[in-house]
Length: 263
Image 1: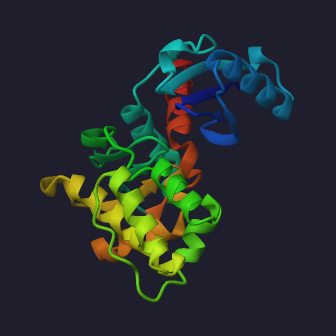
Image 2: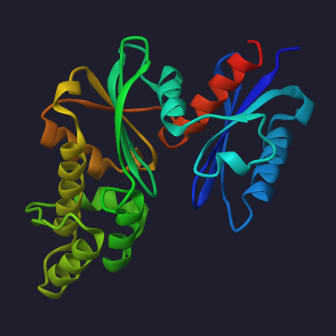
């Protein structure tokens, strides 16, 4: 019987899981970690088994990645986020090309991973010291503008005159947005300005010597069509969106699990 392989991506707020069989994604799932990552991990394994009508013994190997990877007892082993994301694009990238750069916008950090022609990691840069340029930043601004994270992208596309948001610190950017609201600027223009500010901040992280090749966006931020448009405008080139972008790390971990498990 062909085994299933599971990848768990334990973030600070959410736990994402991807189940693979014969190298293809069969299921993905996300849940809140709450205060107990281990309980959340056990629950998500049970739910995935139920959803696919299999037993835990049908899962040949479980690989963990992400912030809480070291404490997930259900996992057989763990792997770094950078390695997991590099592996993930082998499944999530469009088949017609091979990305040289992966932009991953997560809830708590943003990463740029540079890959060679064989998807091996050449280099990477990470912003994990400040929330600016992350999903959390978008959530904060959405609350100020009395909208939802799902509407942030579509609303920004209706902008005719994006605002200038110059602060690189999330606290100062938040104050800047509040000031723009008080001055009666249209929230669509504020959101468009926010996306451009985020794109410029992340682009500044890029290593000039590593800018060749196609670009792939992953992470929950890749689902925001506003930030995607901002990247294409600022970089003046196509930026591709991964399949299952928010599960790219979990998919990569599952793919490594399949190699460890003997498939």
